[in-house]
Structures are given as C-alpha cells and as structure tokens.
Image 1 (cartoon, one colour):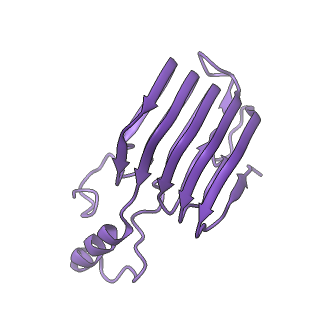
Image 2 (tube, one colour):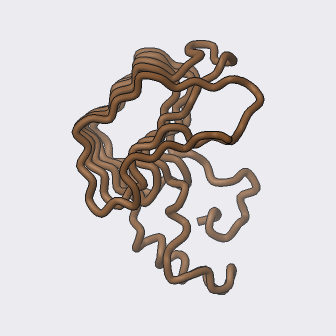
Length: 177
C-alpha cells in the first residue's frame, strides 16, 4: 500500500525484474496486480514464457483510489494506478511467448530494444508471441523507450494469433523522434 500513499522513495517496483539470463522458462503461475511492470527482462537469450496469466484488478485499484482520495485529492473516477503495469517487457534474443492471458489496461507485451551495451544481446531479435489473449490491453507493442544518443535495435518480431477483448489499442509501435 505504500505505493498509493507516496511513501516509497524508490518508486514502483517491477514484479519480476531480471537482467542477463540464458535459457529461462516461466510457466504455470498467475501474476496479479504488479505495482509496475509484471515482467521486465533485459539482455536475455533463450526465454520461454508459456501457459500462465497476468491480471490487474482494475476495480480493486479504483477502490484504493477512492480510499486514498483524502491523501491525493480527487484524482478521477477512472482508476489511474493500473497504468504502466505492462505485462511482459522483454529485450534480448530468441524469446518465445505463447498461450498467455493478459488483462492489464496497458502494454500486454512490449518488446524493448537492445543496444551495443548488452553483454548477451546487442539487438532484440527473434521474438515470437503467439496464441495470446489480451483483455483491455494497449496491445502488442514494439519500442516504448526514451530517446537515446546510442543505437538501439529491434528486428524479427512476430505477433501471431492474438485475440483482443475490448482493447485500447491492438498493435502499437512507439518510436523515438
């Protein structure tokens, strides 16, 4: 709850944050209400996400918003806290994501670029996301990073057989200026 009363000076943490890994598999667990990104995995090679669910309870977030109105003042009738709760944000190479259900009101899968500073991968490449179900999400995203002075790279990304239920967006490419 400290996230809602602005007492955490370190910001909103990611649910599962990993940097530099090889040959990793994630399956069979329901992840719910991450304070920020649910999975933020950087500089990876050989990741297999499959057969699990990511869920953000928007109505629970709205109740917290109303409960803490006295702290923040009237924020809005639309819950703002679920925003920036991305589902899976991978960067690296040889990443397969399949048979995952994501309900989150933000980027369901946001493929992030890599650059020459990576120790395992210098480009995000060979990413496949298939047989995905997205509810209320912003969709399948590529990009979503601030402008940088060094080269960033994303190539060979495939989104296949994605079912959207009430999406805010479906395919979303966020590029730098």
